[in-house]
Length: 340
Image (cartoon, rainbow, N blue to C red; front, side):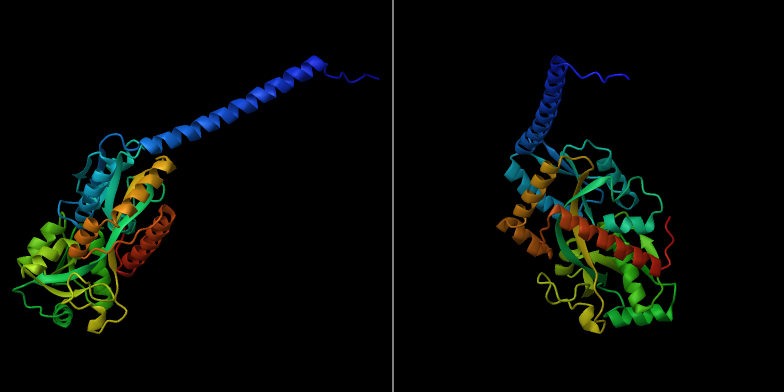
């Protein structure tokens, strides 16, 4: 019968020492990693931060982004620049952020189109649920249904009656296929039981210009984008899409109060970072944006444009974005829009 060989005392000591060194190494490595992330967040940012807006200059997200970027630049004592990269419903600029370094120095500033795109495009060049981190919401504003100041439509009722008498003939503008303005108009068409022809433009400024000239019947414009033309009497507003009137334009009724009590759809703007951005940096950006929205100058600028600050934490914003995606999926499905 063979006897089991017991380890020598010296061998046991060596194994114990080896285990201790391994444990110590793991602990030191973890500590250094956490310490490095902490230092990285503390020193962030130490150079220029670029915010890519995948929409045209003067779009809703561009306006909100510039207001907040100015405050962040003062807070961080670093340049925060806005770079517009419009095209393909926002996909070009969004793709540029997705492929950027995950270090917090390239961020995406986009509108609700981020949530609308998956309902329209069958194959996005990125995964909207995994390729980017939901950082924060920049604020919310209603759409305002505008038409030419010299046009025939004096009310929502006029527009609906005309559309029903000429099904498939009257046009509406949008800031691009798959944009939130596109699906907001489709929602309006569904609620009113009308069929219209979609005319997509490069962005909101172009859509407003052609609607103002009477080339399209109406545009579901972001309020912050169209407020200048509204104040100047260059376009006629038939209603805002929020449940109640907006304080920036109290003279414009809500569509809900005009006999469509269930009608409500809103626009929002947000910030995203490439997947892999350190959580501590994401947290810092979120906190500083939320502080910016409490700044008196930012609040005044927001109020003048009809934007409401609605600060959120990253998890809250992430939940909100997913709910919006589901909403736009339903709108697209109900409108029989086949993903391209």
